[in-house]
Structures are given as structure tokens and as C-alpha cells.
Image 1: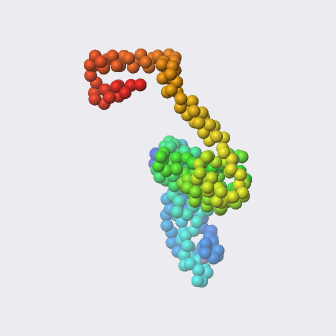
Image 2: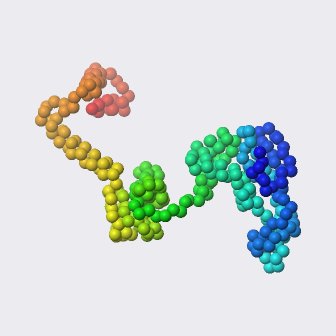
Image 3: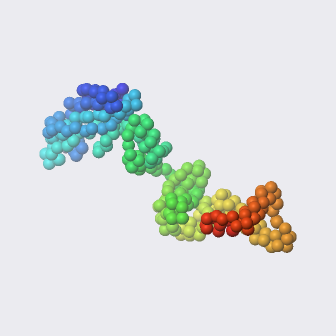
Length: 292
Ligand SMILES: [Zn+2]
């Protein structure tokens, strides 16, 4: 059960029902000074660290570890230092390394509230803010810069804030996320990541300008989604433009079918009721009188 605490000496385990307390200490052996590397066993004092460990049987496990503060034997080096237990207790962390690994695995899939809710079920109590902090602490992979990239914007808050996502256009892996969609930001990113030869982009002038400035030699490719999207919109507006003229010329409804007939019937019913003076609230009457 406590195999993950191997480097510590477990002294006592107390079952408190909802919570299991583990009392442990670091072994007596020598520890190396982080400043000079000299080993020492000379104890200056002790202090307690309380950290959460992986739950057992749906119950929280709290480990209280007695950690030594040791005296560095090297003259001129730091006077004392606190010993570390790598792989078990990381500096400044309130969870054991193995619990942190599990938390990170969850928040990587479900950030924020969803992650916090799932972790609560797994008996790891943690706020959504802590879940987000755990997510932000996961180091980003630093891969090679692909030859063909795709850039596109997405809304962080629709109509207010947008960001830019950069993907590897061949593997569809996400490479980076830029905080906005301005020329300067993408230009700076392209300059900092040399090696890009082809850029797939939307039709906006912003990205085109950034690419022209940073990579004058690069090939611009209109990405398929935007090509189709723009084509469909253009075709639709072409079709829609003369439809009112046709309707007048034909002196009959241009569209026909059961749905059109139902709408017309409702329109007549509503207007018959209005003509009979059936009252509605002011705003509703207004809405009804504008019925198509
Ligand atoms: Zn030292």
C-alpha cells in the first residue's frame, strides 16, 4: 500500500475513518548539500511536512513526514539546508510525487471544474483553481518545427477575444497556441521557429501579412475548410440575391412544400385573431404583427 513511500521510514498508520494518517520520517543516512554537494549527517533540527498521498479504498491518505535540516560541512557554503526526498516529496508541493502524477493525468484530460469534480469522486479533494495550476505546471513538449503548418483563429470569448492555433498540417498535431490573432504575434512566432516552408491559412489579410513579413519565400495554401466555407457562402448569396425579383415576377410564392404551407396557415390564423381583436401583451402583439 505504501510502496510509493519506499524512501521514507513509515513509523505509524492511524485509521481515522474518512482519512488515513501515515507518520513517517526520512532515513538516518547522509544527505548531500544542494549548494556544494558535500554529504553530511549533522542534524540542525527537524520540521514536519504534511502532504496528501494517493487515496486508499476511496479514503484520503495524509502523510506527515519528519524532515531533517542538516548542517553543511563546507566552510563558506550555506549554513544549513533542508533535505529533499526526490521522487516522493517535491519541493513546495503539498502532494506526494505519485499523487501529483495522477492529478496531472486527470487535469490533462479534464481541466478546471470537470477535473476537480472527477478527482473529488476519486477522494482527491482539490479546487478547480488548483486543478488549473496543476495543468499549467505540466511542461509543454518541445518538438521540431514542421515544414507545413496550419494557422487559424478560435474564440476564447466570441466577438471579444480570439487566439491563434498553430498545427502541424501533415500530422494535425497542435504545435502552439498564440494569445491573439494579430500580425505581430504570428510574425514573431514564425521568426522564432525557422524551418516552415508552407502555411495553410484562412483568407484573412492578417495572417497573410504576418507570413509575408516573416517568411517571404513560404507558399500560402488556402485551407480546405475555409475554401469550402467561402464557396458555399458565395454560392448561397448568388442564389439568394435575385430571389425577391423572381417572387414578384412569378406573383406566387417561390418556395412550396408542407412547411411553407403550415407557416402560411399559421400566419393567417394569427392575423385572423388579431383582426378579431384578440389581445396579447404589447411585446407579443408586436412580435405577432411582424410574423413572416
Ligand atoms: Zn554546502
